[in-house]
Length: 330
Ligand code: FES
Ligand SMILES: [Fe+2]
Image (tube, rainbow, N blue to C red):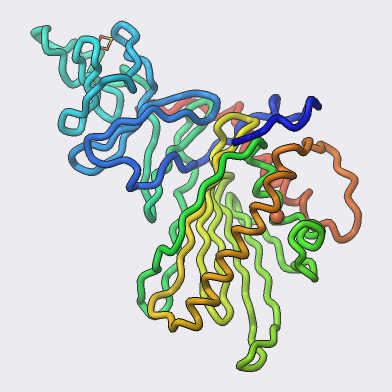
């Protein structure tokens, strides 16, 4: 829950919502035949899973006489049937059936209702949001290969709704000086920040002393678009933190985490792994009160040691450059 903590203009309401792939649910939250109204990006849409297991999403208002397709509609096969007069729509938004008319007019069979691109990867359902409904520009990132041909073990999932624009949540990783102040991390994580097209990459390599002698710890975080980051923490243990941030509107963000570890851990290594996960959750819980109240600084007063926040913002601007993108014509 977000408490109102300030009457200040926090600067988020007028910020645009970036385009990209964004998580709307975990896969198990939408079973075959189930329909859900989703409220994200300052709008709503309706998603359902067909009998074939594929998730589809369309705009929420039935173009016939305006019923809300999230209310009392039914999944018939792979299509969504409106409750009001039983018109059925496929995942492309075409009308597939009108039970009381002899023939579905050809102009209704395609593009009758705007549809949203949907994909599902590693237990998460994503939609592509673009204010002009342009086609996806990249693919969602997948979990890295699990070492030794194993399968990642999903250990924990977490979610939070936070009163802040989504850009600020991922900026936090580039904000070096807050790690000491907020999280009690003794040394700012000096690492390499690089940008490659739609992907931002942070890599930190640190020598560390362990009871078994010195070893190299690696933190590798790859953010693909504004909505998805996958972090790998490799040292005595190996943890993958899969993160999605989804704008509910420009002032509220839904944050989701799925945490994985490698299979076959001994009790000792499992304890270390659980402690690492607890530590990451502790850190975000330390950030949240600050996020819920802070103001967006368009021109922050940065000094040496603050971290590559401007480079981050420069890359992030790309997700707001959509004026020239035109709607996909199916
Ligand atoms: S309003 Fe949906 S079928 Fe008539
Ligand atoms: Fe933080």
